Amino acid sequence: MREPVVSVIKTEPEPDEQQIIQAVREAVELAGGLEGLFKPGDLVLINPNLVAVPPQRRGGAVTLKEVCKGVAVLVEELGGKPVIAESSAAGVDTEKVIEATGYQDLRDEGYEVVDLKKDKTVTMKVPAGYVLEEITTFELVQKAAAIISVPVMKTHDQAEASMSIKNLKGLIPDELKKDFHRAYSIFEGVPALMAALKPSFAVVDAIVAQEGLGPIFGLPVGMNTIVAGRDLVAVDSISCQLMDIAEDEMFMEKNAADKGLGVIDRSRIKVIGEDVAALSRRFMRAVDHVIIEEPTFNLLFEEGTCTGCRNTVLSSLVDIKNDNLQEYLKNKTVIAGQCNSVPDDVDPEGLILVGVCTRDMKANGKYVKGCPPNNIWVVQAIVGEGKAKRQYATEDIDD
Ligand code: SF4
Image (tube, rainbow, N blue to C red; front, side, top):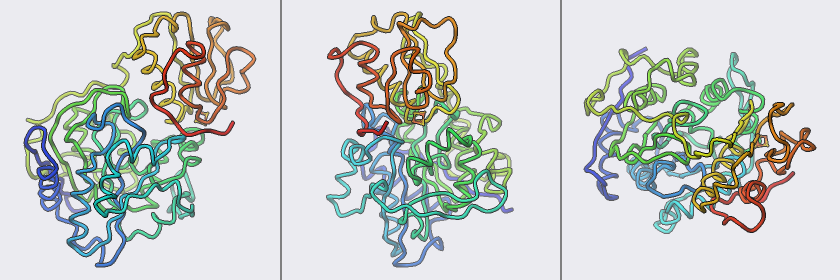
């Protein structure tokens, strides 16, 4: 296999739209450009990370619209038809995220920005040797001549980091997203997704990255950087190097590399542009980020807890903290995920069971229905009705 090329480009601090678009252009061109990936007239799907409504637009939780616009401009210059498309985390209304993150502005400028959750689902075969034989995706994804993954650089509470291959979960419907947690590990499922979808380029938005409790509630890190390349595993490897994450901490990318889907070994990747070692800084890991300091409060994410329930619970805790209601966390235990028993030392008076995965245990505490539940229901279960505002709303849900 030839040495993959990854470009690393720095912008001015706090760059404006034109500076970001220029940095994207330089990064893509240095990494070999988009030439040959599609023909004039072809649909090119640009997939940002729009996981959920973030606390702030430039906070490192979601891909900046300016980065996607930069990619769309390059696609148009080659005669392609760019479509920016995403399906947000399970239970999250993608349209609300589009509105909150400024992607509506791109629509107003004439760019197509699609909520994939409204599209028809289709199945696509996965080559032999993966944890899945086929995946469910969307008609638009299947029609695309090329897929460009445009993640934002961040640490993550289930994987060490969320980069361009994990970002592809935004191209599958909610039910498969949940199965990635319930039935398959994301570390095995994401390489299968990659094998089926064959993404052809990645542009990582590290203008404002995020450390700590990603994918949403971490802390912003101004990196003012764009990373790009045709080999998504190599792009993720170099992006993680910038965050001081070692190759052997990148389980998803390692599995993908073992299947021949790309190169993770940094000694075999050609980096063009900035000096990665000089730019690198240690990103706080999600497990090291304490958001609640009440010592008698316990949070248990059982095996198979999806992003939907994790985000719901964590956003509820952030709401409680922001509303100065932390006293209600005293002696409470919150459990989410596939729960078959409750630890003996948990006081039933303070037990909150979140989501349908805990339904069999609902006689043991206060049960919050939903898959995932609505954030406000979790807040109310903890603090009581009428004491907290709804800040990170999800869609209405089915029990
Ligand atoms: S209840 Fe939560 S953890 Fe269980 S499948 Fe639904 S979203 Fe996932």
